[in-house]
Image (cartoon, rainbow, N blue to C red; front, side):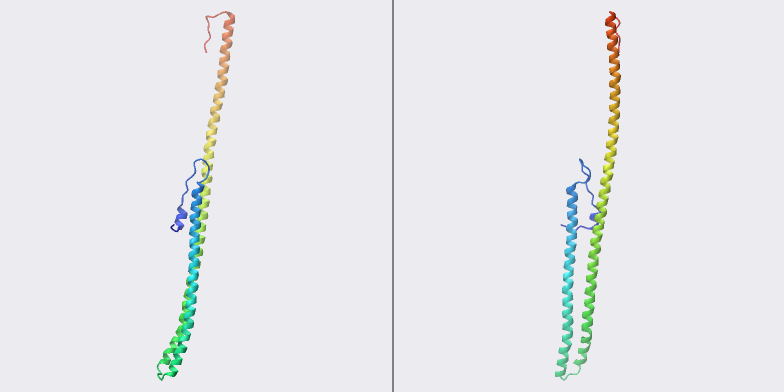
Length: 199
């Protein structure tokens, strides 16, 4: 699985469901699983970098102790040997060893602090972007719900209007049919079969 980037989180789009409000739950869950996996990988990488830094610090300390022990051994050999020129050569090594080890230790500590700060900043950025994406998804879902409710309300209003028209038509039709039947009864009773009323 490739590591998620901030742009992946920012540009992620979800498909709206057809038969209920909101987004496809499986799709959202899969995306959140990818975000969690990316954060776990960042945490593992951060822990690995901390372990490497500790190993580097131990190595720097070891080299610092070795640098201090080496000039002492060099001084002992210079005392035994009659060569005078080796003693001044051991003095710069003695002064440079701890300074070099201290410099390496500071560099390692600075790198560690930078990696930790970068990891925290990246984690906070991913969380902030995930929250922003979540808020955007919620806003879009609410907008979709409002649009759907407005559309349903409009359709309901139209249906109520049609029902009212049908009721008026039924009432009018009943009145005309009743009038026609009464006229027909009146004609039959009068015995005038020639004049038949029309609707």
